[in-house]
Image 1 (cartoon, rainbow, N blue to C red):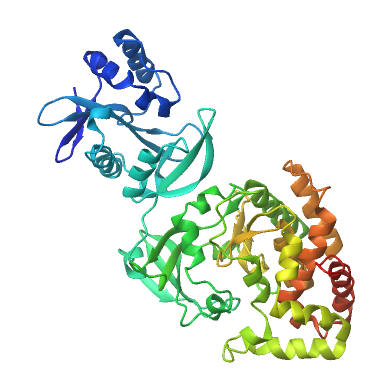
Image 2 (tube, one colour):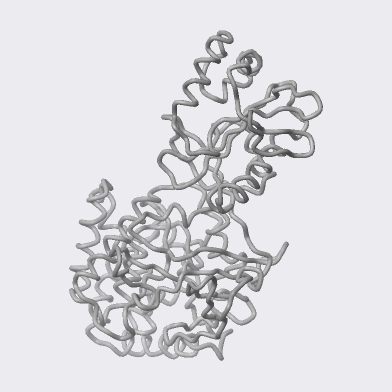
Length: 492
């Protein structure tokens, strides 16, 4: 029998028919099989059938179900699982231990060895390792967390609800993240206005972009209240992996200092040849693809729990308040915000009377929106963050700096507000196009659409109304929607 790997106390080897009695001793305990959603074993004959079924699955060499044995006694104390997921791009890391072996750290020790074996022998990256268990299995969840895995959401596995944990390394620094790079050079994007440092990087002959976040130099982090670097938190929580396949988020790695939120960094594939050219009009085909991808993402995260630690809606709607931007007098965008709001007060005082108080206290708008469905928002669907891959047609979506839970139409409203001069169809047609795309994903928009989209348009004006004060046609369109939304706020 072949030994896959050894740890200080354990050996993990192939299972044989001679293990049937020991497997019966393992699987006859309900304390073990309850978490496998199966009854206790009836005897060694059932275990021989189980072994035959495991072998019959046709796993690639090096994958499957293996015996965990004590090195000093040779006793089989459990089963180590290392196999491809049937429906996810991960390696399934699992374990089951005899109750007599609980509390000794065997599960953690064997699993750590399996992770090393997967990397060194099977060539699998840590970011490909996943584990699932039933939600109430506190012991297994504790092992996953000791392994450095993070909860990534709820999934259906083997027909039952499970929790998914992912193992993904976070480098201790930006330099460690790009270790082995053969070229690094500063990168300046005309569309980049936050103050984040960008570098072009070549690793293994492939082109990447390194984005470094530092709250001391990035006004958007400060204005949006990003105390924990949300873009890196998405990596740590495995949420990039949950983004639908229609979207290329480009992220391949992350870094942050031990015990500190900043500095932090993301490593992304360089997709610059496929991005929307600066200031160029957008084709109808690309525009419709962007809206379809937006709808696909929102549908994938529809009413998902566990997103509250990301950007709250109140921070999203207050970040362009005069009091916040006044604290950033040297930043590229904030210097224009206060004069823009003053111009709005002069040119459209009635509109300003609705909007300016909400900038100081967006609670009424947030409360009104809270009664409508929520999803994961990207937060910045501007054309500078978008593109289409020429090889597979997927939509590129960059700059995941402002993700958080909120109404789907908040992303949509921002899209029409920030890109208004370059869209190939009207704002009203754009709203309708997105709604059709969302309906196509099985989301029933009829009960909530009119209310949510009206309120979300008010929210987008809180974010960008300062930039529209000198555009009469824009003010007329937005003003009508703001007026309708104001009547939906608490107290009206």
